[in-house]
Image (cartoon, rainbow, N blue to C red; front, side, top):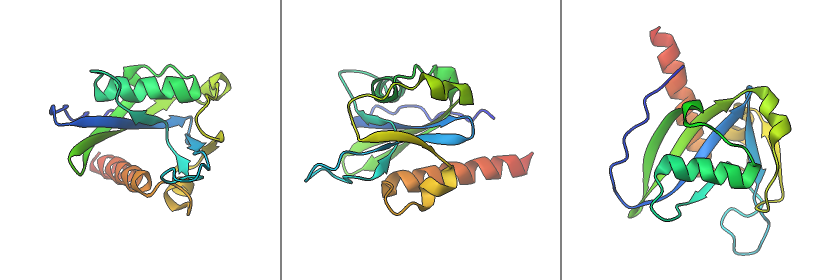
Length: 150
């Protein structure tokens, strides 16, 4: 199912995340447990801060390459939305690769480990980053509503 990606408005874009399904589960990363790190030791999604003049999509795909070693084509991204966080704008994307891509993961040097997790488990997990739980739940609701319309 293809969803339109909202256009980038040029607001102060700071970073992007990618909820990446490999088959029917999400690739998630356990954040480092360093003192002072926001949401230390929590489950997170690939993504991070903008570098240079990159677009939100470029940011999300670069971060995924750096963190999981996966080259995700833009065509694999099916949904995206911007979210205001104070004066900054951060983007949340959803993408899909086949289950076979799991064997292509090369875990980078950020975080403690990576693993696969069902979307409902991530949304309910007591140690997942709350804002990304909410954004993933929004995507799941959007997907469900779209399927009901058909």
